[in-house]
Length: 458
Ligand code: ADP
Ligand code: ASP
Ligand code: MG
Image 1 (tube, protein in one colour):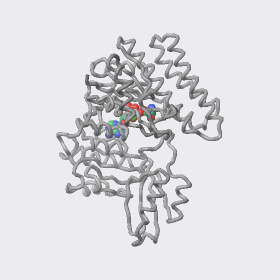
Image 2: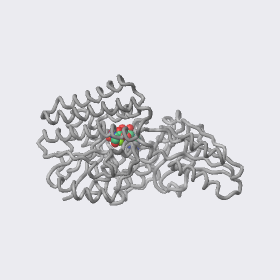
Image 3: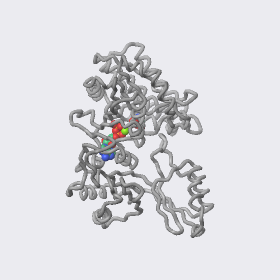
Image 4: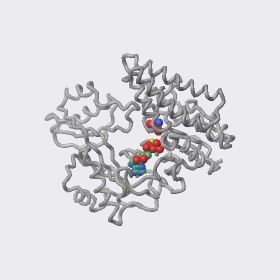
């Protein structure tokens, strides 16, 4: 049988009404058998605040009671058995116990934080299963940690793909043949059965991985917007939904900040050539965007992505002049501290780079540690500039089309472009600007590329 995987994000599961709309979506398609859910909107953020260990006991109780209120508002519309009520209670009291323990401990623990974070998805998946059951669907709750085995890198765990495939075949497919299965995005478990998470926004990635493992025909990402837009619709009301976009373009968009998809989501989809649909659970009939290998249109300008809070690190050393090996040493230090580099530009004696923050852990810790900076300073001068934003123009044949630069520079002739990178990929042109100019820059570029020319997005 060919399955469709449906993933619902936080806003789609924010309350009972929203969950009911998601149930409509599931019930409307017989092929939709595997449902992957995020935590209800707001819950993960509350759990992150609890996991940081900076709240006192009273504040912990306050945060837990906000989580409890979100659950209770949903439960009020359901008929739960005593056993089911107790299950919810036990999850909530576990949240309280761990957060009080975290608040009393000297140092924060990524392991405990991951366990805390997992309760958001555990709660929402349990309640959404019940919503489906009460709508007459044969639905089962499935603990994804049985199959989503990961490394022990708490807060940004790496999934073991071979284990996933074999345990899905053994443990998930047999249930899927009989029932609709509701499971958790974002979480996994390591070899010692300790709960891990895949990084913020990771439920999209979980859905794609599970879709690949069950051999699904399509992955549907149901969110709060009707597709992938020419740019974040929160930045400009002129943004519009794209009918189609290629895997490569969408992957670049996600990497360069379009939050609508987690940056890793398209990797499993591309591996198996599984189309990904993005649509709104609030307006499922409004259509959405299909992401696939080949698109009919290949416009030079498809979309603009924005990544805020960027840090530019410039390392300078006269020793670099005509000296082999300097770059290798800088990159080795960054690699030793587990950082990967994103944009790079070089001159004779300096290198400017931004750090790839797509794998930033669920706790959102700063990547530039004292230890790293000290090591760099042993071989060069280091300058750090913060509060920058990375803008990425996404499209096709950007490296071989005339006029891209002139369009950019003329739209932004009064803006200080801090760094610019183009040429490595035919799908993007990236540059850095001051973060406080980001909204204005995107609106102006959007106007120039999508509101008055014929080359823009389809
Ligand atoms: P979910 O909780 O469903 O996973 P997210 O908040 O993670 O939803 O992603 C949806 C949000 O992504 C939208 O509300 C929108 O503001 C943002 N977004 C950023 N860039 C884009 C884009 N190009 N197209 C659509 N949405 C975008
Ligand atoms: N609930 C997690 C988060 O808020 C995962 C997700 O929503 O995809 O990051
Ligand atoms: Mg998301």
